[in-house]
Amino acid sequence: MDLRVEILSEHSRAQSLRIAAWIGPHPERFAALIHLFLHDEYRVVQRTAWIVSFVAERHPELLAPHLPAMVARMEETGMPVAVRRNVLRVLQYLRIPESLQGPVMNSCFAFLEDPLETVAVKAFSMTILANLAKDYPDIKNEIRLLIAAELENNPTPGIRSRARSVLKEIQ
Image (tube, rainbow, N blue to C red):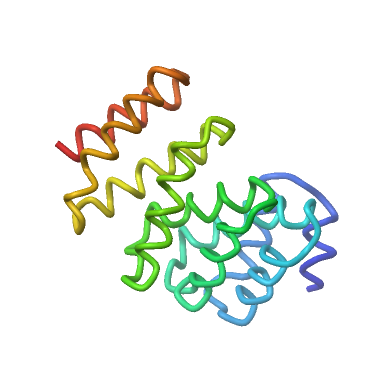
């Protein structure tokens, strides 16, 4: 299968699921997908992001060798929001390696503080920070302050729902 051609042939959930099923537990196929996700043009990155999420849900072990590159790419300015959103979507379900916890934590705090950041990125950042607070309880107060500010400035249903859940978790 020419992965890039298949990704560009159709943009639908069904097509994304078909490609994710083809990738399955195969590390070499997943590596090719990650390469497209991190280095191709905007449209390919955007479409690939969904597939990365689907594969990561079923085969999270495939992510381990790619996490440093994914986190680094997420931190770059000018990256499509699809990259940030889907890297964060995946990270909220993983035990983040210790070597990446600092950079991920810093990025999540920055995303929460950014008034122009999307709701999804902020919501995923809240969850990741709550997960990290289990190992770093000192960050709980900062999380609470940022969530309070977010609820005041951006009280969308998605933010309210995620904020309630995270605040309950970090009590």
